[in-house]
Length: 116
Image 1: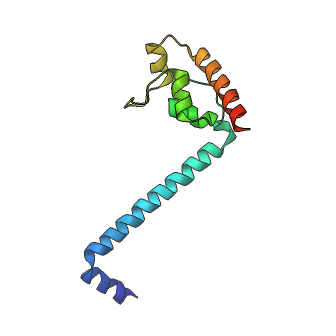
Image 2 (image 1 turned 135 degrees about the horizontal axis):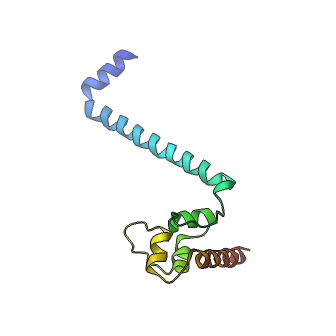
Image 3 (image 1 turned 45 degrees about the horizontal axis):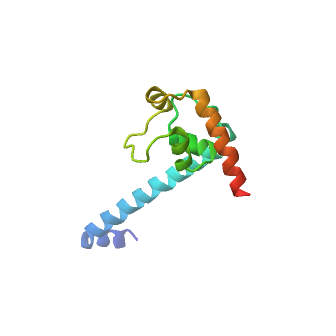
């Protein structure tokens, strides 16, 4: 077995390195999938009261809403390059966190109504 691996390494070094790199990348994304799945499966992370540190994507994942719906509620464009926190959004708009929470709750009710 070791002889076969040694022969592969000597004859096909580039392919061996590419295969190992592919295994590392696959393991990284598999681990990332497991970690995110476990995090969002925890009921403590679902429907959390809004806080200023949260991003629109986090809010969408917490409330099980499409990101586009959250963007509409927050009145922000989809082309924003950097993730902004709710604190940033409140500072640049006339919304408060309480108003955003109310809008998110309404969006959840209307989104659930469409799914039935």
